Image 1 (cartoon, chains in turn yellow, cyan):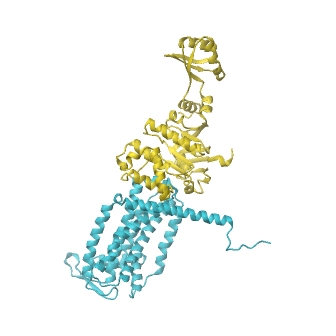
Image 2 (cartoon, helix red, strand yellow):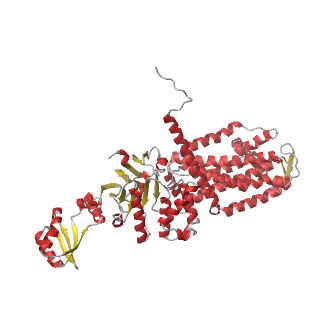
Image 3 (cartoon, rainbow over the protein chains, first blue to last red):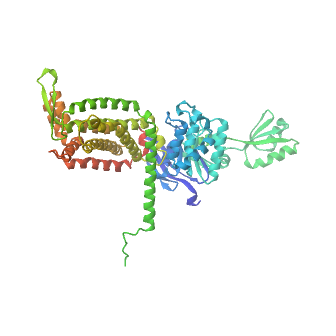
Length: 312
Length: 307
């Protein structure tokens, strides 16, 4: 990988708070043009890692290059190239949404000419047009979260950090925001994303990093991690699920095979057997109506935790 | 043979470095001005009622003081005698003051209260509510945030304290506008300098101790109070009023360190009076300011997290 393709390079980054090691010698790289997901339970070190990478907290040891700037030498300069949506957004409660966005458009470096156009753009993305004249104090949690995201989107920067960005946002709008972020990374920009919600994250994240108790456990794409940690599991909707269960149990080495309504859920012992499923069922005269790969990233994370002994 | 460099000619690296430095400085200034503009537009959330109340009280005291002082006709030379009756039914005590003591003392009181109040209210509302943490998401260091709050205090303090300058004119104190402006400006600038020294020294202490044991507004207020109460006029006045002259005379050892005291001596010399300031004392705040600013750059924004 060319150095110029790297957006973030963390080298043995550590942070201690007294006797507590919040982040333990974490090293990883994030490439330009990807959504990098950083996942773990509460207190795993996700937020501290973000704060270290954004030059907001001094590392106890190690370093990182973010947007070409060393966080140790130029912590303020690092933030010229990124925008952050913190987990807990604090607002100027008495300000109206319009004035708030105008202020932060100025903080994002927009001139009086470019400000209005940019505000209109983010207001459209975050669907805030109905709230522009309302004080932030009267808005709901979800609406406030949208304002927080709108504030971040005001910055024309190549790197966005999101700490639990979609908390409290409705399903329809989550989809729109995910699409916006997808467009953002398509242009070669980078998103660093943390969340507790791994199921939702699967829709947007290119590479997953799992952290627990300050230790980086694993990094990989969804496919790589599933292949490594989960047995192949499928839900197959067939014309006769009971017959399908018998055929598959006789023909393949299975870990589990159960019937659920008009579906048969099968867990294979060998990955190579995946290609044999269709053939076995069609030979037996069964029509395969639908076949879905099961196994979420949550299951992957739990497996990783078990294997690394991170769970006490 | 080594080629001697022409100091007037910049290398491309130097040019780009200088350009980048000036661009950075300009961008940071823009951010500071943006913050100051917001603070001014949102002054109602930075204790506006308190500032208005303080101004009203100070203005009332000022009107009373200047009406009394009207009997004098020289800013430094004419002795203006105030009869003060000490408590406890003792015999009356006479204090001798020039008109400069009154106008300057009042200007100091007003500027120190309003500038430090504006700084404290704005800084505290940002830090206590935690909104400063959103500001630190932008390319701002603790230095720029402190500067923005000081700028706000300078502007708001000036606006609210400005009537002090006009009051003697309106009340017909019959003094030169330039002289009165010099008195007001000295008091205002010194108040601002003391507040700035307090803010940056508090930051410096945080760098050394790694924890914000004393917040910038607290140290700023302490320094302002110290400088005011160690000035010779206030010590004399309090000594006489409280009948504790020996105690206040002992404290008066600190008087030369009072910037406000040195400010009065400076004005006295400028306005043709007999007294002169100790210039060395003016170097102390400058040195502290430079040290505080330098150390402020070493602070990480998480000091606001650990509040």
